[in-house]
Structures are given as structure tokens and as C-alpha cells.
Image (cartoon, rainbow, N blue to C red):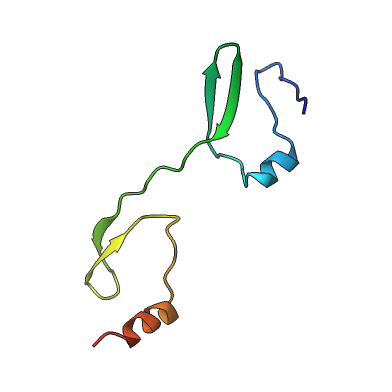
Length: 85
């Protein structure tokens, strides 16, 4: 697949490549240099560190992973608590 380098040194990945690897604007790529060749690969996502915060609704401590973390619904909590003694 042939692509062009812009006057600013930018490369546009074709839609087919972005779709196949589920890349979107702002995603990071790693540039791997080896001899006279280079390869672009999707960067591995950084592991998110959780932290304990106070829930504003209940006042109880809870674990959070910040923005973009998966949302837990009331139904999910109810299902988890069904087996709790």
C-alpha cells in the first residue's frame, strides 16, 4: 500500500487500515526503527491506576479509574449482590 508524506511530514493512514485496527484521532502509534526500515504499530494502552475517592451520593469510599472507565449500572450491582450473604 503506498501513501504520501505531506509537506509537514504527516502521513494519512487509509480508512481501511484505521478501521481494521480500530484507530481513531488522537490514538498513539509507536515508530520502530530497524536497519533501513521503519514500522508503525498501535501503542499499547497505558495501564490505568485506580484510586479511592468518596462517592458524592453515599459518602462511602469507592474505587475509581477516572474518565473513560467502564460504567457500572444499577442492574450490574444488583446481579453481583444477589449472591452476597
